[in-house]
Image (cartoon, rainbow, N blue to C red):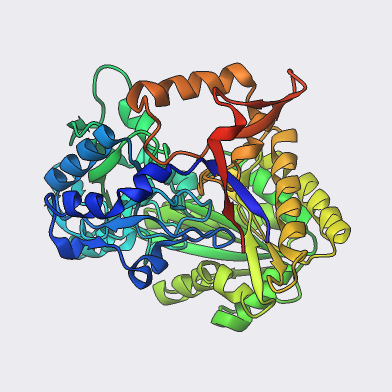
Length: 499
């Protein structure tokens, strides 16, 4: 068992635990305050299960006023607060602290308004991503961002992580699809940013909050834009004899001005696993496969499908299959959506990496990932949001092997360093959390990080909201050549076990 550096535990707060329980119970129902060990255990980790920590308390408020009172109280008492949505995040952003109140937003689960005239939905943060589409699809509308976990992940968590999905290429990530939010600041102040309009004057505070991973505020309401379903949608499966050929096809499709609604790539390892799992009818003789989806009017889609098929043949495509019905199109996507669970049949455990590169560097990065797989002697399956360069290498390992997780994490770190080296970034949609925070110096120098922390400090001067996430605790910045603990001394930090 190894450890993860986290902010030092405040023992005085822990000693006052019973008094804190009594005080918090004045702001919400006592049944909403979870304090027993068996009640707390389900909250000790999120989707990144490598690290576990039982929180001091879990509080499940029911409305914005309760959140405001709880945050105001915690601010005065200097109690750390970790916001949590559905707990599906894969970067450890919702990892609790031993002396924190974990603020669960699961009871904020109502859609408050569907406004078809302004094409938007107002929802509480605990509403699942897919529930928004379900609420409006009878009127011919939908919500575009669609993470693989959309059946379970919450819209508040989507905003906190700026989640993407397979249709982000054409329709953007969460930041391109939200219009307004209601938030509670650390001192209990309730404020609204944006609304039902497409743009607001002044600073882009909505953009600042989106992707801030719970470090700046607690989100209590979200207004998202909804889109009219396109008249025609078709998908095409393209098999290729090599990853390079598939990557070249992706580059040519985009360079010729075609913007598919979705464009996903999977390698041979993942093709076989997902096909066994979902029976999606993938070309198993291919080394790589593209799913290209196009939407619009019937004539437009038919023309673009033919163009994509022609481009694929120029890039040595070995098989072409066009969806003939909506059911077949959804079947094509069923395998890609099931990529992560399908890997469960390949190894006892898997670790999903999230990084982004320029599209044109896809084949080069994949060659390097293959070399790293051989170096660490760990198999890897590859899935990509190919159109926007978001990589999801899935590393297979066995957590029962005490060295296997350490090797897997090092493998993942090397992949992310590759992404930065080739002009990409550390995350495409999963966020930084604790998983990637020590790699932030790969992208940012000391001044860059300081400027970001200045914003954090202006809104949360005591660093009570989700401390220990996103920014390095102990780091070595290249230009300084020395270990540097940002604004603190080493005694301020303690360890969280990794299992």
